[in-house]
Image 1 (cartoon, rainbow, N blue to C red):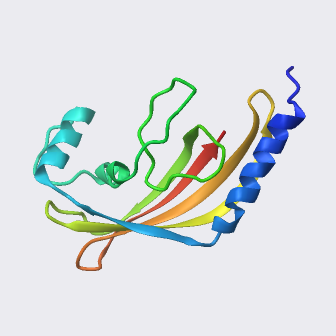
Image 2 (cartoon, one colour):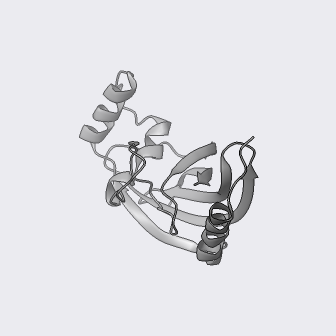
Length: 158
């Protein structure tokens, strides 16, 4: 079993210190227009024929194109996250998602995504070392102020 050095443990605590002020804070909202081109492209990417309705999980990809991807040194690929984390982490992976759906979005809708960091905790993995686990709650509303969806997103920061 590998023992983690003090520098790695201090790095995990530094992450908590740098981002702990985000807990309970609303993150800047994002607005995304749902276009026919983007929905067709999403459907092709997931191998689903487009029947004119916007697939629910299309929402999970909304807003990712509005943030730039930070440079990575781990040689792994990945798309930018809607609400990038601050701190010295190079990698953020999705630990889990929970969804509740409301009014189905339509092509032409402008969806506003509001997020709030609900929790942040430090953990020590047996093999993977120190990590930080954050939970975000996201609310998606359309331009008629109807709730389209709600998402709880758990992310693991390393």
